[in-house]
Structure formats: C-alpha cells, structure tokens
Image (cartoon, rainbow, N blue to C red; front, side, top):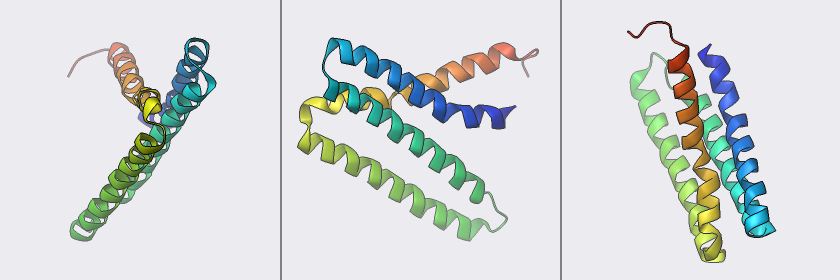
Length: 124
C-alpha cells in the first residue's frame, strides 16, 4: 500500500503544480506559470531522488552508508539552493511562483497523510 503511495506522490506534485500554473496563467502571465511548473518538477525530482537514495542507505553497513547519505543529502541541498540562487539573481520577481510550485510537495504530503489516516480502521 505504501509503495503505491510513494509512486503516486511525484505525479500528484506535478499535477498540482500544473493546476496552479493554469491559475497563474490566467491571473499573471506565461512566465510565472512556467516557474510554478518548474518548481513542482524540481520538487518531484527531489522526492524521487530522496526515495531512491533512502532505500540504498538502509544497508547493514551503517558507517559507510551514513557517510554516503550525508554526502548525497548535502549535495542535494546545495543543488536546490543553487537553483533558488540562480532564479533569485536572474528572475527575482518570479521567485514566489517557483516557491509556490516547489511547495506543492507539502500540500500533497498533507493530502496523502489525511487520506491514509482516514482509511485506517484502528488507531494504534
């Protein structure tokens, strides 16, 4: 059940960011809508990368896996910050649109958590 949810989350992130982009297209302009979609795509890619790397780091070799995990998570953080930095420098008026798309991940997690909790028959 949970594997199905983990496969569905990136698609939901992109779908929600596309819906927000359509709304932004009518309210603002096409470039703002593009940044909303790009933010959602980066969030979905980050989630996929996190999901794949977490399964690799749950190996019996804890010391080596921990060092690799810290290195990759540090690299992931640096890449996300680099993307935000480039957008701030190049398109400072569009950073909020990118953040809105990137933040769709939080809304998708909230919706999935509520759906999963509501489908549980007992609370343990």
